[in-house]
Image 1 (cartoon, protein in one colour):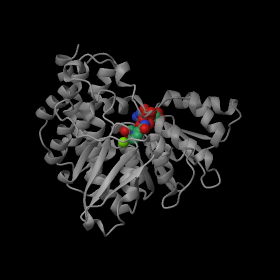
Image 2 (cartoon, protein in one colour):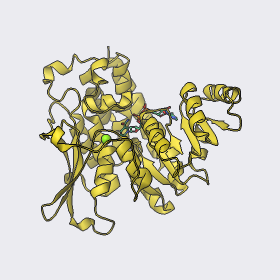
Image 3 (cartoon, protein in one colour):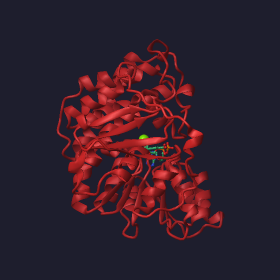
Length: 386
Ligand code: NAD
Ligand code: MG
């Protein structure tokens, strides 16, 4: 089952599935509102169910499918239907590829139903990490990271029970399109420049997150929950080529890495087939052609998002959910031309300052903190924005 089937992760997943039809069957697809691409995907994969969050779009799809010769595919609509399909008894693996905090509830439904969850939606762990991992343990759900850095760590991490030998992890970051841009010039960058990532082809929100380095910031929090490591054992390493996808440090001085082309089909295929391997469509890497790899320490002054994430992680409770919500509001405003680039982390800082600390011990607490943070970020934007 693919949640977020029309997005960048969804399309890469379907590409890998297409190459491995003997091993997988697509039970269901879910997305927000796009009808046209889903009709194509239905033709290719003949799923049993399609669910759209948007009810109008779902009605349109339900009318169109029979006319396209695709009768028999059941169409669902709305948030409750998304959660139901994610927990469908016949689904084994659920790819969590919805963008943003909207992905939390359907993904949690899959976790509670004990599915193997292939997790791309990092916002689940950022907003509700403790809750999410507890529910997974309780339900016996396996969480397999799809995010390339976390999948790399997953590939080289020792098997459960031997984590005592791990001294830390290093998350690599390309540094995004503005890695070398002086602080004074960052105020002027446009949404068009920010959505042009030098190495990865991704959805617009995560591409802006890469430009502010908020993506890496969210990934620090994601790694904390996935691998059970304290913040001081998680480091960020800038690596402009995006070939080394992350590293695990061991007590004996060993540093193990996973390398490959920057193409999400590799981590998706590794997650789908785990512990086996399948083809992904990504060619093998010729290091002689790559020739040189570069690494540098991140610049916390030009990219304050990194410091904000470490602080939110230290503060705990709902602070990471507040950070995430403020970021979603600020990125949307930036993409719409209502906020300058440096305003993104300014809005986040002001929202974090205004938030009261609260424990993130229930979905309701997380939802309430998320809603309050969106409201506050909106107010701050009204003052800060243009
Ligand atoms: P995208 O914008 O390309 O696609 C988002 C998908 O989510 C679409 O199918 C859309 O229909 C669906 N969606 C959006 N809002 C929804 C809602 N309220 N209900 C149901 N469906 C909804 O995003 P993407 O780049 O594919 O990213 C998806 C997730 O994967 C994000 O959490 C991102 O951080 C993570 N991720 C992406 C990449 C990448 O290379 N694109 C890499 C690592 C992690
Ligand atoms: Mg990543």
